[in-house]
Length: 389
Image 1 (tube, rainbow, N blue to C red):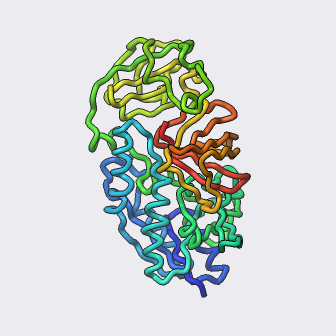
Image 2 (tube, rainbow, N blue to C red):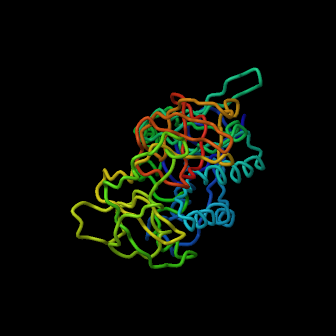
């Protein structure tokens, strides 16, 4: 029998994943990852890791599979939390869930599973893998989950071929309703358990409190930018121009209030400014952490919220399909998304020596440095990159 180590999180998805693998005849081991132990920054009862580990243990007992708890909290702090602090300090908005899959689940967890004699690791992600044979050997394709409302391929956009070769996604062909039905039919305690929310392995956090552990409050100006400001009209059609945000260069606008640190805020954010008296809601259209300034605009249709394109530096380009890279001078059309659960949108990808310039068919709202863009051919994830600007 092939041995599979399943990342049991204490949720219904990984529980059913373990059951399905067992039904297929695999030798299944359950492993719970403890990656966070600082309850001071979580919202009460929203990150009950002890409860989750107990739920995972009950699932393992119900299925009759071996179970272990392993502590990755030190590595998680080093690889994920410190990265988050550094990104926010620079005025960027990281996606720890993407990093968590790359650095924890498909690196540390995978290595631990191999030490246990595993042939594969498995998770409860809503995505699929299909392996094909090419002239250069096997190629592992990462496909979107069949449940369009739960597809999690975006969160796996940084995994590579070596990691995919050892990965199984047992529930990728199922709808969420089917997963819960299976769990209920076999009597799993997680059948009706709510889906987890918030940061990977941390849960819902009081983000300002979380960031204030290392990033001190610093009062600065909130500037409102009029929605008819002329610099939002592109002066030329150069790729470099179309992938820029103009807010840092704005000379217009007025000070309308104060904030407690530009690094606590992100583009597109509405809540948290505590500034009233404007006819329409205020949205953050840009932040300047060097000068500690927040730029805002009224209304969801403020032109400062929308951009034609974005730029990914050469060092931050990643192709999951390593056999389909873009070469300098290439121009290719992909579907892409810049955040989880966003509908796929068409864009032209222009490969230059310094990186990748992405020009959208329709302007996109809230493009945020530090986030990941993932690109697809139909339902296959081809690659991803960290947005620089």
